[in-house]
Length: 383
Length: 186
Figure 1 (tube, rainbow over the protein chains, first blue to last red):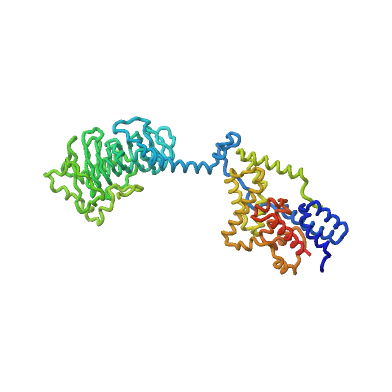
Figure 2: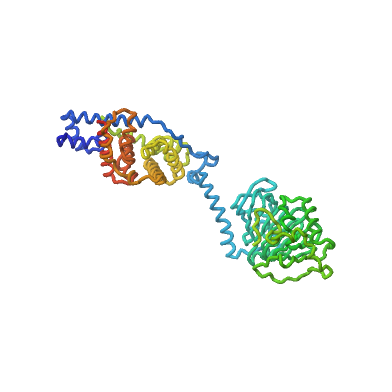
């Protein structure tokens, strides 16, 4: 069936008429034809019924998805108490973003900006409180006194005693980076870490870093460009040098030892440092201590190490430390040349057989060198 | 006679909405929540029109409001909240259809008369409950256009940029699609 042309034109206009999209002139045409043509009028009614059904169908729908809710309101973003310009910054998502930005940028700023413009290390011994620029780059610290926490990306206050909540890393503006195991207790000054108890790993590079020190209850470690691990408690300190050079003094300053890479030194309270060859401290002998290391640990382990290292000779206070050379085939050569240093207190001629006190268990180990002397989880292995 | 809503009514609706948007921009969460509640069902229908399968719509609907919340600060013109939100919904639908590897050509094309004529042998009687069956005969984009224009009363100049089509094309498709629906009924 073909409709007459006016009816065809009329019907093409119906949808636009129903949505109110006809022009004034079209509307007049439409109404005129509607008056004349009953068939087209009934067609319009059908369209209207169709639209009516659609509208009531969609109007009667109920949502099947849960009502959209905003994320939980934090007190800081409660309405009306915050200035308008601040509001967007207080949404949780932006807070997280800002924290990440700070955590990434602050260490970068310290390393890339402060160092190149000549932020020089403060001379050793000259400890000026508040002068340090020490950033926490990973982990969380809690103040041992107040319970306030420092989170990653913020500065660590000098002179405040902190407890590492988890694996934490602090970076000094002049270079040294110190990784602390959980429960390590320490404070920082402008150029030193004062480790009361705990396990740390230090990475100190560059000429500017030579003033850096680690101070424990029993020893003072002076750095000459070094990577080393420290286990410290009230009664003792065990240091294993991974690379570079390190000078170890007792707190009283009465005795001193210089360490070569691969060597370890044990400093017990009121006793001179005892240098131990690497091979003495297999992982079987030094299990990862739980931190904080208490006095009994030092009494027990210290006694064992000392006996193993030096069964007959107990050095008196202020005597030069005993250096036990590691058996040559076992000590891995270091890639970097180690400067020859004065061998004060090297093997006395009277003790030619010191190297033979190697425990059989260790020598029978097929790969003794591969085992780091201080085997503490989470620590970087010796390169 | 069905006509577009009278001008004062439209203005009142816009004013209420504008007020809510302005308050939400000033940080009043309750206003943003009210805006979301107001558009909750509409966004759901929007998505449902596109996919025409109820099960697929819930994630997309949620995603629309999450995106709207995250990017609310980027809404430039407070008077265009509806367009902005529908645009987010449109993008979310496109994104989802790409993820499902749906045929984009098929989604975008206009409803074919031929496709309808196959079904024309069994005309649908017009009741409220037969509307989904009717709408199923349109292509996804035509379903959206018909719903936006004739049910949600969104003017063509607002629909066109929303769907990346020209105003003329949207208007043609809309009239044609409604005509097809009418034919199915007879």
